[in-house]
Length: 149
Image 1 (spheres, rainbow, N blue to C red):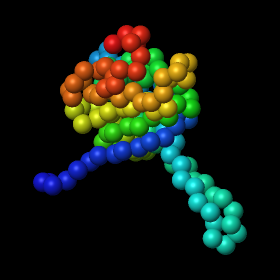
Image 2: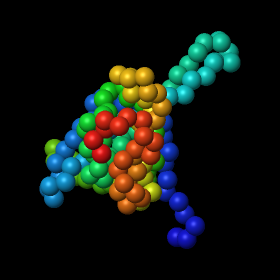
Image 3: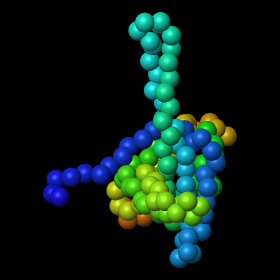
Image 4: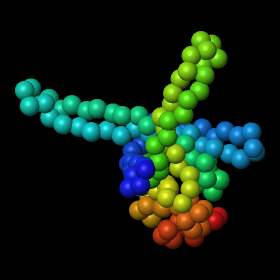
């Protein structure tokens, strides 16, 4: 269909350390659990309310997988751009079809940005990593000369 767009933009915090797995083809994939929250004040009670949504993020770009493995931990705040994808799989125990909806970071229009800066130095800010198809895997801004990219 012409004129359609599949793009997801999220800012949130990791709910767990990233999970790095080896695929059958020998390449690595990173799986992230990202929490986004919204808060509001209940009009009737004045009580503060909060709702958290959990998102499955899957990173296929080898360079970004290495960044995830080295630098991301539970609680890290990140910004991701990717595409929504639903895949079908069969539950081995019940034999029933199951579905998983994920945000996929792969290809030229995906990126991952670490927010909040480096807590071990005086540098504060962001580091933006693009997919290899869009350019290099080095940070868009040079916050730390010691990063081995």
